[in-house]
Image 1 (tube, rainbow, N blue to C red):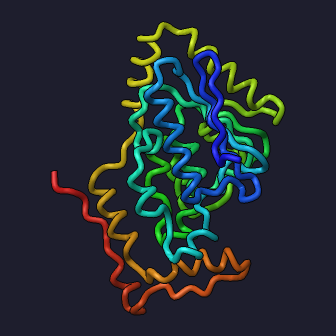
Image 2 (tube, helix red, strand yellow):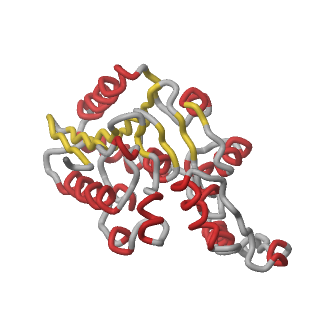
Image 3 (spheres, one colour):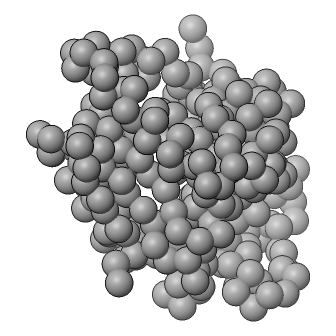
Length: 269
């Protein structure tokens, strides 16, 4: 059984995460198979629209933290981080519809964020989990998704959102019952395929150009903050999750580092 199933039909590639027993968590094999599927989609002369979905009660639960604990490192391995994945890199010139069947957490939330169109089942749970796992909460989600500051702050602090709330704040295009998820995604794909090819491609380039981007000085500040604090808490968060216990946080290697938290300095104009 492959962790990633691929179907090809009349110009549409359906990419389906298929590791339901681990809530489609992003381990080494899953990341590898996904990269292969997205490269095939990019390189195909016959496939013009992708539908991205999952099997089971989760779309994707994010990082495979049990694998991270077993291997003694967090996030993607060095080999998978180097894989050519045009979906993650933002280099696809074809539209992607994400059909969110269940939980979209952490890295799974970010997979939904990269799509051009989002359809979700009512009651699905969303969570940007960085603040729980990486010391710094996500700094880009509000800008990328044009969310109000208060909502973006809530996302950054790893509060959970229902699909209904995400639809209300404009994150989702469609909200449907479970049995209508794939038919609705297919309906959107059919509409895209009915457009003149050049119009479809040109419009995709334009809409992506209009999307918000995090300024360089904010990116630099985020990197600085991401490395400020006890690095051991990253592994501890994953161990606690794997062992189903409350984490024992250290916070800072030197308690005085809390008062030395870097302050933002805007780039000179």
